Image (spheres, rainbow, N blue to C red):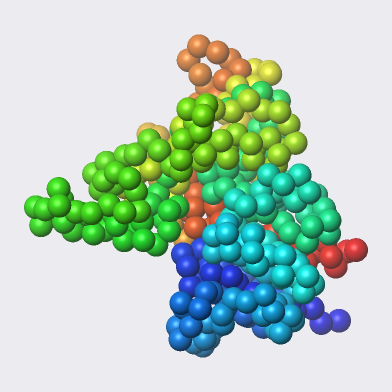
Length: 345
């Protein structure tokens, strides 16, 4: 019996994450019947490359999902776009997998990292929507889940080093332009629009707006999303920092458990976890770095070590390509798992 193939729409097909989704659909030989690349009217006349062809971008409208009999709709075009058009996709009979923050904390909508809580995908029928978590949350919970099962995690303290691509194409271009201006001895004249501070040769301890509690919205996303995904009231504090790299988010994590933890045992536990790669030989300068995770679909973990003072505390360093693992890869894996579960139903 032949495998069922699906009509798949990618909303925001010419954006940074949309382009990665298209690449992934080709790399993994997704069961695709028809690709429907969607974007706003501003993108009409443009094309996307897929499977050796140049496909024209189709305007995103409320009727386009019906017209093209879309069965899976991958949204990566901003929260306001998802808010307006995702219900139309659902009404047309598609399952929506949304990359924005708009639906994440809705109690009726599952928030999924397939390596952590694949069972939650089954709740999609209540709303027709599955939410993709924040990029920094995804790679973190992939590492937290197996360690929690082994040692009972009670607290996480995280510091992130997040690439400019997390703020979109224009942010990446701003970093490149500012570096060019630096070498032309005119960095002080260089504009910054994507960020509220100079990003070249700098780090910015702010991602998104500040909340009343002194944390940024990005930091509170990590707090709230982790609890929802892991179905556990884990205490978490985050400091999210934008750094002058193009791709690849890094995180320094301090994990407190309810039992003693051994770094060597923890390393073994993580090595068996799905889509985790251990890079942890400091003597040979082997550890995860943004430059070595680009275009990879795995999450890399290293610098695994016990705390100097407390036997129940572990420290580690986690890196992943934020456009892949933190967005496109997770969304496509959700789609794959959804197809698998629908086939079993």
